[in-house]
Image (cartoon, rainbow, N blue to C red):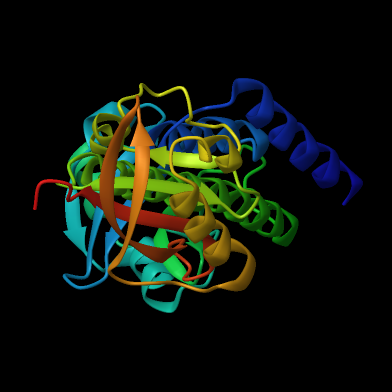
Length: 284
């Protein structure tokens, strides 16, 4: 078992060194490095559509690997059983085992003798199935199965994290775009009181540039003390107000500001800061 531990450690160290980015690159790494680690000439990763119950060769390495990519078929064979049960499957007698179907072999000319199929699961979601074919030792062992399960789970977690980061980034970009296109001004600060939002309309109303972004919100006091106070009340006390008015002196000219304060929450619903939405209502 020590040999497997050393191989798994090497697998994870090489992953950190290569630092593949994106889902495709991570599955590429899995089939390439996984095949080498398990001492087999071919490996594939299948995308799974659980609704349509279909499997698609997404990544494949070996003598006919390039010819298999993008080929789809229904749940069948060893990989189909793995996707259906969400459990690893080991078959060392492919020619006679009823779980194995020779459809891909007949179409590609490849000869499958032994198979390891492992579900890639993260966050309770089936991301796909990894398959390793033809152990150079003649047969896969239970140790091979455990090692394969560990590296597949490891990469699945990395893919899941990458997907979460991408989703959060997209949500942040959409939120930032929405804030920047508001018809009114918006200033938001995090729980430490640092300004994280200062949209273009806020710059227009207060006649400043973006110099206050990433600065302590208290530095805005000279522009409009009431706005700073409203943000502080949200952050410190969770207190919000609606439809308030105040007068600020901007470049020597008085402006009447109508404002409301809000809680800012993250995608998980937790409070991440406070903000103020406001308009110049001087001429109204």
